[in-house]
Image (cartoon, rainbow, N blue to C red):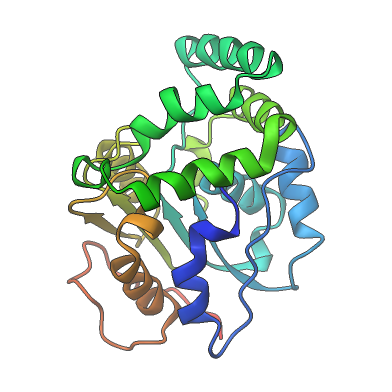
Length: 240
């Protein structure tokens, strides 16, 4: 339930010398249909960054069109399928939202899990997160929830990823914790893992400068890496 505002800082910095597309993740109620629709909007070759559900869609894009992706950035995401417990929560939330409780679900159930402890009193940030969700509306919430509920397990996809990949997450991400990202990075050959301190689930908003810097290095805009990489990029051919 985020829109282009999630990537505002990164889009402003990276669009100086390249086209940056920040499409909405709707237009279907399955991950496969959303990915297929996005692929019709993208150029023949592209670098792909996805956060949370965006990362889940990125796994599907890799499955559908692996040769079109030349770099991959996975932020605060989850490669596993929904658990039975989480599916039950989504079912109840969809019922609540259908009855008109979108704002209540966003405010009371989602927002408390989004941000690092130090950011939970940032009213401007909290208001923006709520505004994005309310602007997208109940129908998008229903479709995204259904897509996430029925998403495939992408664990087997990870080892097939052969493009330069960076994995980024907040140290306080309660929805997709660092342990998941270590699994992702360990399974993707040559990937780099970066855990950002004082950061929760919405890293591009909570730590915009840090995320922008990591993406600049990932894209090759800045030649020297921010951190010493945990894995080697040897053998990978970057795209221009």
